Length: 455
View 1: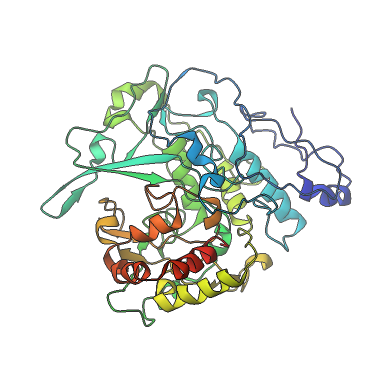
View 2: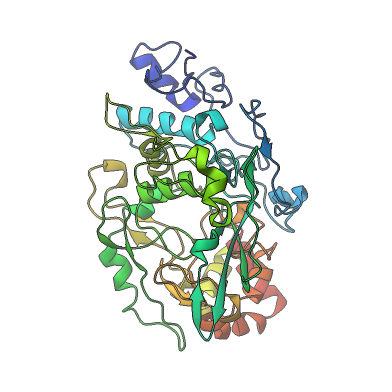
């Protein structure tokens, strides 16, 4: 069974535990499961500094052929963040590290979850029968593992007389555009008159977002806002607990916890059935096409030693992942920060929220500089037309802006390549603030953009 090599920031921990080669892998988990080998340990105290456009490790051959993906990914050149005009490179900033102040056990959980996050699934380990990609890191990759990318997924449905039908019986609303050999690829049904693309969102600092109390997000609806700006909470049933919670993850704030977010992505993006999503997805609802996969056995098994599965480990990785680091501020950026507030941008892109008391000290009562109120807003023509949970067709969650300088596929569908283009596309509740931005002098707009490029 292969060993796990400690990541560079775990070298002191490994020494303290007198572990010189690896963390042991639980006996009941498939060895390497088709994933890339663990990275070698550099000489301490070196720190991994991911590049602006990392090259993912090569995939191991799948156990069975898979149908190639539909061409929905933007051109490869768009994935290079340095292609964005005026974008400072991420080189020199360290993304993808664990939160400061984690215990040794929490650091091990982070490393264990990261291994699952980069692991490339195959049909032998549960991939499919229909899916969108083979690992979490295949989409969450830039500027390091846990980040965003230009990869898009497709949602579809039918809208008539103000009523939205997600076309569940035809495989909606999420399209899985790949399939294992012998299973037909899912397609957009002819009855769908709403089709939306959504880009991958980063999960840096996700544990901090999860630790923000529901009451704090609710309080944001009561704060004074510019005329026309409202915002409301997304109330969801948390899949992991069955409790009503305030959603905060996803473009429609459709998840409240990282465990439910992890389980949903595992099942619906990779086809890995788990205790929260036990049923295989069928292409356009054609259950006969996947009859051989319906054996009643979950792909994601629970380790009897600790009662945890890969779904839990993935949630741990995201929970313990540090927030994206800020770039240095110059005089222009400082002026732009003041203009950001004066225009009213901060009424939705709230600079900071605060976590509540938490059993994990690294997450307890921390300031979270996410630049989002985590509320749903009516974005007018910028809405994606999809009704999801309590979010309407025109409503989208305020996208957190931290880590903005590492992304150039902006807005929910990646249509904007620069912050300037993204601002110009704002509509609905943000229309008046957009118009105020457009009235700024060129130098004033540049100050605001310089500020955004420090996030």
